[in-house]
Image 1: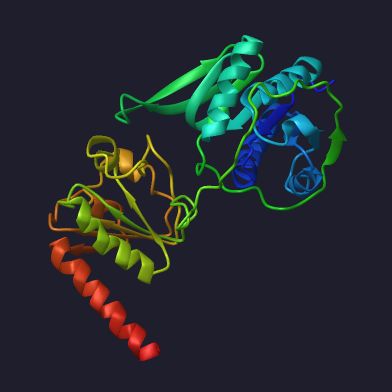
Image 2: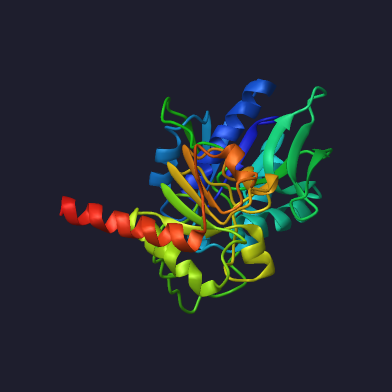
Length: 322
């Protein structure tokens, strides 16, 4: 029996590698094994790859009914093995699918579920403690889970990916899994034109200083020239609706090699989401903007003058090198 083990799961391999890092810290504090769940059909190669990144075990459930993600089928499968093995903690990646799965699983197990967490730790009494943004990112809530297992939804980008090393045991489980209640008629993968902001090595990010949605074209041009992508602060996405997600404590966390904040004031909630960037460049016409305190390099000036000049300079460098 795997009682008191720490388990991690995400349908996204990169997110699962981040969860393994978080899970490793917890398992070492509790002095218990770390395991990863792999569900799907024809996914033994995924299990083999993850087994080389730190877990003591990989629980593999390979079944035809799991070929396509269905939250009810996946929740039923995980519920079965949780009741059999009785882990102490289950870390799930807070992706769209992960959130749907965690909610269903918590209801089936009558277990506590801490969502949108940015950190997870073990308290002095051995309880599971997690932190998440509250009041629209204006505060940080610390929560304690009283149930077993403690289900924790961890936001992607908060932990480094687990490095390779060691070889965990792959445990193949045979379960009776019901057919999905929904039948897939057609599947069309979404066209992705650029790298996700969480994975980009260069991020050009716009804040309140950007006057119009169309003005982000300047940032997109600069980002393209640098081989990166564009992001924004919470007011741009949540208040104005120009983008669907934002960077910050209540949004996604990034850790690019180069971050360029354009018209970003530097509120503490935003800085929390960029603090792991290798180099931070700030462009703001207000010399007292808080972002400059976190920046490695700062340009005090009107972004509508600075950005075109940067683009011009990069074009000249490109011509010389070409």
